[in-house]
Length: 603
Ligand code: GDP
Ligand code: MG
Image 1: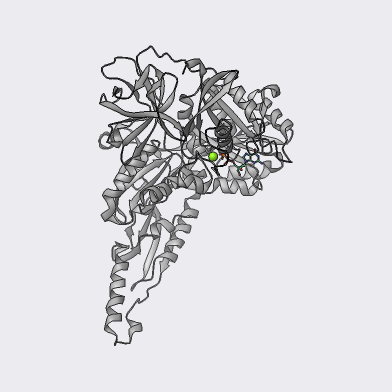
Image 2: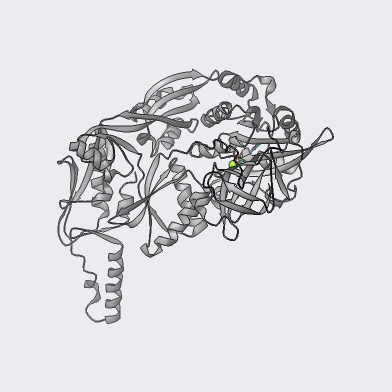
């Protein structure tokens, strides 16, 4: 295939604007899938994607399209739309020269449309603006084109109008892809450079890598070498994705496809790696910016004997999702486990669901927290912590208050788009979350785009739900990292009859510490079963008690109901009680059910 006849592109859009539907229609119109197949959203292959109706993983498909008597190879990469998966989007973009910027003609430009546009714009890609859902009665193409002009300086005459559902305008879109997007700059004659932009694990074939061939070509039997690890492999199979894999003999410069090598260890498949021919001294591709996890949570096997199984499942899944960071962790209540870093809460949920569905793993995920930083005093302490600045991923590992010079917390720069009727409500919501309002611009006569700086911790739980609630569902929200600022934080510890419960340690802003502590003490009171003695539940900040509840004594005698006689019933009950004990963590002489550690932190 001549390089001039290749087009590599992505579809980027706000969630639900119709990416997956459009991808299906493109596959159908080009004959890649047949129309009669009731193949709804064929690129959303993961169970979690079908259940939640969202795209999590970018998927690739190659389409063949004839235009003006020429045959073209179009490589389509479907991308996730949610803010938590922006890392996947930016990775897909590296393999492309152009994007379809898809906007729902009824909903208009939304926060993620803006974020995705800038990703493509900064990567210097050709942008084809497309209005989707023009079949809808209440579609407002004129208004949406005005928004695109105001925010992105896109001229209305360049905007295509389609209905991904009905197929209207899809042929014109295919023509625009061929005409407007440039072919990749690739040279088959140069030494091989293939960028690994995705990897996944197959039980039988080992690690499979998705590559974009930048220069040269890969053939079956070739000896390849990883620029990162310097390890060598032999190519066993290679091909392109046409929804399913299609074997080919070669992958040439400009093409996108998959390569199966004798790569057995999941750690060897590194995204951003460049594959070259063995012994070649060609410069590797610069690769990718590492994803920065912003939400951390403990992950533990429900049953400690499954520790090794869970470790292997986490390793395989992180191969498929390299944005998750892994640290070994230990909890007195939950045993051996990990502290994993995610890009956001949805990302965390999806990861847990994938562990359960794809690896049948049973896991406990603790309440999430953001990474804090502190500066500490004293040469000895600095030496112990390995530096003056310490990043704290787990609140119970926060250094003692006496040695802390300053606390820092992470901020985000949020973008909110909503009708101007809700300005008051939105402002109040943001201020209540310690937000600082920045610019406001009208994107059309009724809708406003806000920028607001917020502490990440404040949007971790419920922010998006509250925003939807105060704007009758009309607001959209997206955010990006905005660095750290000094902050007035305190460490809250919880005590049961004077004994500290490590797992419950929290870092919080001083202004809301007491409210939070009261709520948690009350939850502990409600969730810890009464025992033979009174239990005091206390919350403390630096030696001062800031909240307190008491759990009165109660005699829990399971045998009382047995009236002496029935021995089998009695042993059964005793056994049940012993089983119950396993699910308990002893704090001093108090038994605390393990799930209390999770329920207590939910709102
Ligand atoms: P994604 O989140 O961007 O992948 O969006 P989907 O492709 O899953 O589409 C979201 C919803 O919009 C689905 O219910 C689709 O059936 C619907 N949809 C997509 N394209 C169109 C269209 O052109 N017209 C109409 N009326 N609905 C559409
Ligand atoms: Mg989708």
